Every structure is written in C-alpha cells, then in structure tokens.
Length: 282
Ligand SMILES: C[S@@+](CC[C@H](N)C(=O)[O-])C[C@H]1O[C@@H](n2cnc3c(N)ncnc32)[C@H](O)[C@@H]1O
Image (cartoon, rainbow, N blue to C red; front, side):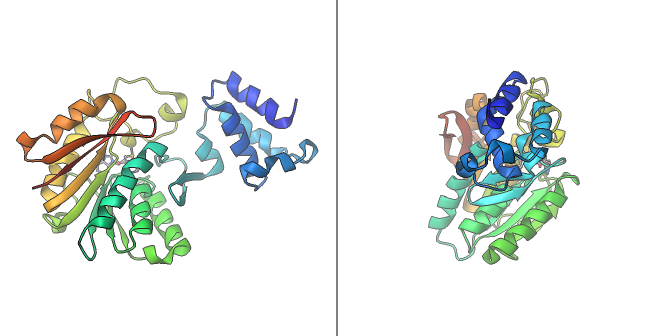
C-alpha cells in the first residue's frame, strides 16, 4: 500500500470524517507542495515526520492545529490552541456581508464583527471591501493573540487592510459604545451550541469552550447579538448572524418585526442547511 493509502486507512479506522482529504492535506503540508502535486512525491522520499502528523490526527487533533493554518475565502489564517478554527459555512455569511457592503452608498462603511476569534470575518471583509473600517470584538484573552497575529499577517500580505481592522477586547454586550447608532453592518458568528450537545473529539477536546456553548437552547449569545446590533446600527443598517442548522426558525423570531426588525431573512449554507439570519434596523 502507498504511504497515502496507509495513512487514509489509519485515519478511517480512527473515525476521522474525511480520511483521504486529511491524509493528503497533511502530506501536502509536510512536503510543502500543493495537494495536486502530491503524486510527484515518491513514497521513498516521504518525510518520516508525516507519520507524527498522522498520529496526531488519529488522536483526533484538528487538521488545522497540526498544519497551523486555516483557509478562509482568500485568506490563510494562523490557528491553534485557544482559538476557534473558522469553518467553510461562515464563508457564505461573510460573502453576503461583503456583497451588501460593496453595494452600500457609504464612503467608508463601519463594520462590527462580534466574537472575532481568528479574525476570519473581519479580515475577509477588510480584504474584499478595501474602504470598510472593521471593528473586531473578542472577549477571550486566549483567542486575542491569534486575532492580533492574523491582523498583522494580513496587513503584510495585503497592505490595503493595514489600519482598517481594529481589535477590541471585551464583551460584545457592551463593546464599541462610542459607535452606538453609527455602525453600517453588524456581523457575528457567536457560540450557538446547546450545553448538552454531544460533539466530536476535534471540537469537544480542542476548541475553546467560549466559542462553542451558549445556554440550554444555544441561543443566549444570539440574543445578546440582537440587543447589541439594535444598539450599534444606524437607521437602515444591517445585521447577519450565524446559527446552527436546526435553529433557523428560532433565530428568525429573535429578529422579528415585533422586536423592531425589518426584512428578516433565513439563509442557507453550501450544503443547503439553514445557517444565518439577516435583518435591517429601520
Ligand atoms: C464561534 S467563534 C467564531 C470566531 C470567528 N468569528 C469565526 O467565525 O471563525 C465565537 C467567538 O466569539 C467569542 N465570544 C463568545 N462570547 C463572547 C462575548 N460575549 N463577547 C465577546 N466575544 C465572545 C469567542 O471567544 C469566540 O472567539
């Protein structure tokens, strides 16, 4: 069996959800080649450290902790212990925010990213909407060094983002008080997992608790985002909040007309599952 084939069967045996993709990404990372060029690395030339990486993945450490990188839209972000690994489903909500900001008739739209983690959403917006000014709020002191590193890394790779993303330490319930009523778009991927949920080891053992759980129905932080968006948005401003796929109806009602919101909409992710809600503050 080839080196990759052997790694795939070990990862499959360990219960890894996508064993071939993970084995190939580990090998590509270890040999510093794009995944498409892996066939050019002969089995005899395989770096023995690849098997250390496979053993870590077998123990269900997240792939991105082993490689140290997570890809998000046009960014590669540094990740590791202490920070949430950004997910592909959040790319869709970020794309929605980028489109709305791009068509906004505002010289320098002001954005608040509540619960910024690695900075994925904030930095994607700064990269793709160069005139935006993004305020990234993060409450977890273990996550913030990662946000800072990624802001600096992005400024080096894409100088137009330099000085356009500001990290604020603190709780999003009270953050950015000097921007009350002045924000054009609030975007958030808050914690939304019910505390009783069972999770795979990659999440339960490695992701920060503050990024995951939010009360018995998983909606506590989303309710805080709703209150914060009400406080922060200027008239006509927009909000987008991510949620778990079974929570679409419940989150719709958090942003209901009765609470003052207009044009509340459910949106799906690439798998067709309910994934985020948007609304306009009148
Ligand atoms: C699910 S992670 C999302 C991180 C990043 N936005 C992303 O999409 O990859 C949620 C983040 O919100 C932060 N957070 C949770 N509750 C918070 C609060 N009340 N105030 C500030 N940050 C909070 C967590 O520490 C975590 O970094």
